[in-house]
Amino acid sequence: TQIQAYVFDVIRASVPKLELDAVFEQKNDIAKSVEEELEKAMSTYGYQIVQTLIVDIEPDTNVKRAMNEINAAARLRVAANEKAEAEKILQIKKAEGEAESKYLSGLGIAR
Image 1: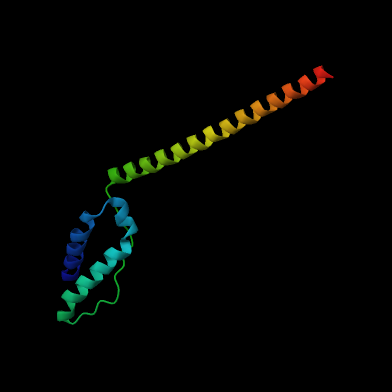
Image 2: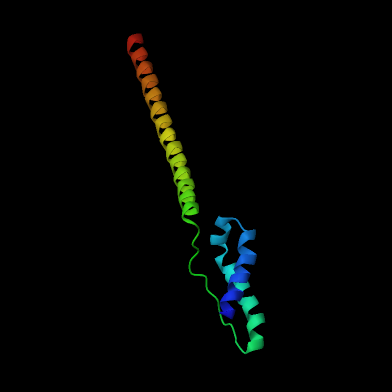
């Protein structure tokens, strides 16, 4: 129970300073902070902390839903840009084809 209290204390002290995406990215740094604090606190009781591991970060359901919506919107934006770029290339190729056709038609008339 004492170890758990120290773990929660370190997590409550370090996680609120970060944005949610940074929490996921810096799991190892948070685990290292927990390890260091536990080592300091528990060494006086004869415990040696070898390693700490953060296996999962579980934000609120609404936060997860919002993160998924942000990711989906970003992917839709990329897809829309790619589709627009493809349509642009098609229009350019069509215009080039029409220009070439008119050029060749003009050559035929000139002959």
